[in-house]
Structures are given as C-alpha cells and as structure tokens.
Amino acid sequence: MLLTSSQPLAHVYDLAMLDLDGVVYVGPDAVQGAAEHVGRARDAGMRVAFITNNASRPPDAVAEHLTALGVKAAPDDVVTSAQAAARVLRDRFGAGARILCLGADGLRAALDEAGLVPLGVAGGEAGEDGGAGDDGADAVASGYGPDLRWGDLMRVAVRIRDGLPWVASNTDHTIPTPYGVAPGHGVLVDMLSRFTGVTPEVAGKPSRPLLDETIRRVGGSRPLMVGDRLDTDIEGARNAGIDSLLVLTGVTGLAELVAAGPALRPTYLSPDLAGLTTAHPAPAGDGERWVLGGWAGSVRDGRLQIEPTEPTEPDEADWWRVAAATAWHHLDTTGAVVDIAGLRVPGRERPAR
Ligand SMILES: [Mg+2]
Image (tube, rainbow, N blue to C red; front, side):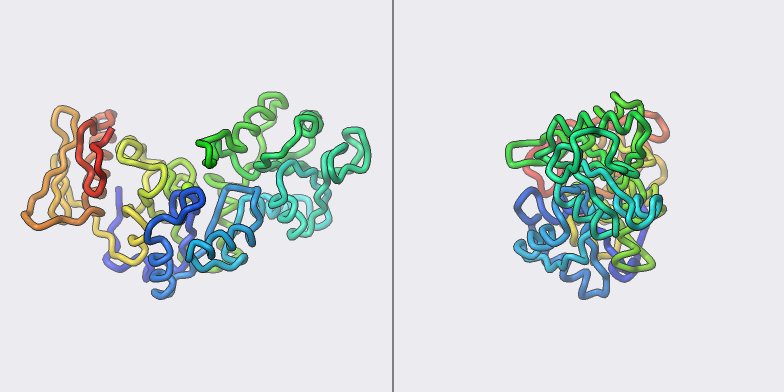
C-alpha cells in the first residue's frame, strides 16, 4: 500500500538515490523538468546521488553527460554497479587481489580505484600469456561491454566452470540504445551460467551492494530510492529495506503498475521528479471505493474505473495513486489484474492498452 507523507519527501529523506535512464534522462535526452526538480530537492536540503546498473561508463563520463543536460553532477555524485562490484570483490579478497575483467573501461577503472589489480583476459589487450588458468586471478568480474570478444568469453567461461569466483555487475536483460532495446549484460550472465552451472554474485539493482555502496559514498541516514522500474529499482529498495518513489517517466506505465505484486510496490508514486518536493497523500478506501484529491476508483466487472468526484480539475498524481490503490486491493483480494483497456490517463493522449 502507498504510504502518506504529510511533509515533502525532501524534508523526510536526506538522500535521494536517483536511477538515471527513465528518471533523469531517456537515452541522450533529459526527462522534461528533471534538472529543475533535482535543483529544488537539493535546495530543500536533500543530497542527490545518481546510480546506474550500467557498468561500462565511468562516473566522470556519466557526470559530464548529466551536466550537459543541465543537471549539476560531480563524479562523486555518481555510483555505478561496477564500483559496487569492485567493493564486493575488495571485501572478499582484499586489496591487491587480481581480478579477471570481462567488461568495458568503466569496470576496469572501478577495480583499479578499489585497489584491485584488473587483469585482461589472456590473449586480450592486457594478457601476459596465451593460456587460460595461469594468471593467478582470484576472481572474475563481468559487466556490460559492447566490444567483448568471443574468445575472451570462452576463456572466462572455462575458468568459472573450473571454480574461479564470479561477481557480475548487473543482470539487466535489456539496454536502451539509439537503434532500439538491445540485449544487456544479463543475457551474457545467463549464457555463462548455463554453460558453467554457476550463478554469480550480483552487485547492481535489485541486489543490495549498489545501494549500500551509494550510502557509503554519498552519505545520508534516511535514503530514498527513486526509479522507473519495478523489478530493479523498487524491488532493490525493498531488498535493502529502503523506502522508494516510483516515477512514471520511464518503463513503467499503467499496465505494469496495476499488475504489480506486493514485492514490486513502491512506497510513493509520482508522475515525475516533482514528487521529490511535494507531500504524498495516500488514497482512503473501504475495499469498494478508493478516494483521493477529487478522484474515486473502483472495479466493476473486472474493469478499473476512475472518476472525478469534484468539478474542479483534480491532480494527475492523485489519479495514479487512486489507480494503484484500487488495482492492488483488487489483485490482493481476487488474484486478478484489473482490466484497463480504454481507460483515459490524464496528461496522456492515448487510452491505456
Ligand atoms: Mg531506469
């Protein structure tokens, strides 16, 4: 169930951990209003960290991209799954451990920064020999890398199968690209797991290490996770015992929201990052009808209905809260996902799928 916050979230939480794609930017472009909303949250006293499961770009490249979009960011404000993977490896194997690196520059830089020794796969760029198994590696780190070579992958697969410990930066199955949604590092993890029979330790969302690493680096005692994706951002926050804000500027639309089981439900929801500096009322319901801010939600013959109860123009955020509360109650009591076909979503031109 959604929680109520009578105070703006920026007053209740002292650290906002913002997912990037679908929250601050979509591909190369900023989400409308993101720079302004982040600025307001900072003015209200909130620290802001930018976190990403993408292990290929180092923090300074991400900070540069954000700054170019008008969102002020220093490299220290950015935490990547590569850094979280490096922390996991350093905690386990100690400074100076030799780590076989299957990924891009961002992963290699993070291992280096953590005091580990990144090794190229034998025969690759930094390889010192032509064989597999004699480089003295303590573990393998893997992450998204568009230029990975099949030959390197084969060597690493054999090492993992033979028992070398393995930490993966993330398991996202998709990655947005200018030419469409493409396979992410999770697809490679699946393939290696299938061959080796080994499941890696994962650093990125929805696992804990990335969120723990962010709090360690950026500080803050009352963190709030902010994301657009239920099965990484929101589930990750739940796994870490952290409250979460879902924004609707990315991959989650009405269809995903109404079908979300309890483990995937955010603490708060807002159409966009403006929700960082507003209070969050929650709908009140009697099991039949859920009401908030001039909207009433109910389910008739399995269909979600949301109707205005007042002649004044009601708030768009409250519409979404009523939709979520009504649909989740229905899901929990009947086991059925509400039908949303044809429902008009305020602020969006087309009816829901
Ligand atoms: Mg995202």
